[in-house]
Figure (cartoon, rainbow, N blue to C red):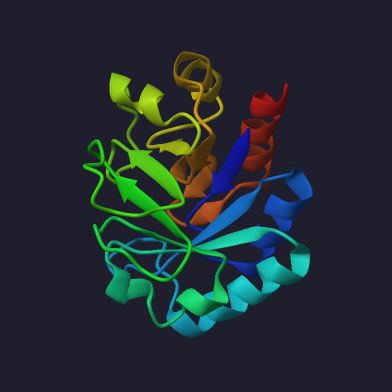
Length: 180
């Protein structure tokens, strides 16, 4: 199971993620987000992730938010239907219409709110490349995995003590529930 932790705002969270066995970290470049990281710090975070041997994603709503740092990250993650030259995680709250080329599909039914809402049945059609997100935490992640059998899951607020403040213990509990 592929596991991504998103909304990292501090360098030590990358170390937490690597030590705990996460597959990817996400750094948010959308300025209105509580988890926003400025571009220069985002580049440094991507470099640290590369040094630690963990995949990284530059996360934005639109391509313009991530384009200046995209080359430093393994993936970009955007909610905009646009084809790019970068490995892309296309994030959406609706079923894709086939017009966008992407490597992975991130289905975030909560649209970044962190509130859990049941996923639509169409996600089964994309199980080989879909990453489910939105209100996931240690208490509900296994039910979601059992019900939808996704390629992966993505967590952010479900492993936080407060907006943008990751908890090592919550990160550990989340991934342990998945692995066990």
